[in-house]
Image (cartoon, rainbow, N blue to C red; front, side):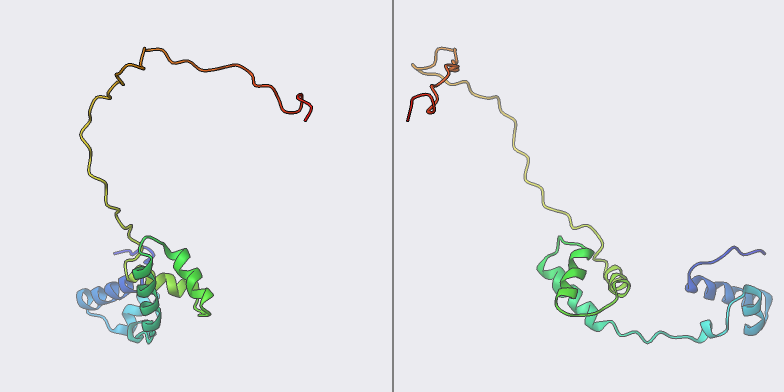
Length: 140
């Protein structure tokens, strides 16, 4: 079986597990077949993004319709020097990148427009096109 380039480390680990089960090979041999270092299998991330999570949730609560650029600029203005890739990763994990739906106004029933009636209405509208004398010509 020929594998194409796999992008995500999680997929690489799945292929590694498949090779170990289906072909009954050791971890070392399976890693060499894929071209993957053994350390990837045993690596566990130690990232602590709790402060970033808390700050993003706070900003999202205050301004729910704003997006990542706004949140990141607010964080930078407060003096936090966090990498934008780190903040964006946490932003995506919190699913804040989903559009917030705005409530629609209820639809009004369509009604025909009423024509004005009364003594002053004769059906003719007049627009006065008479030029007014300019103040400069009056000599003042």
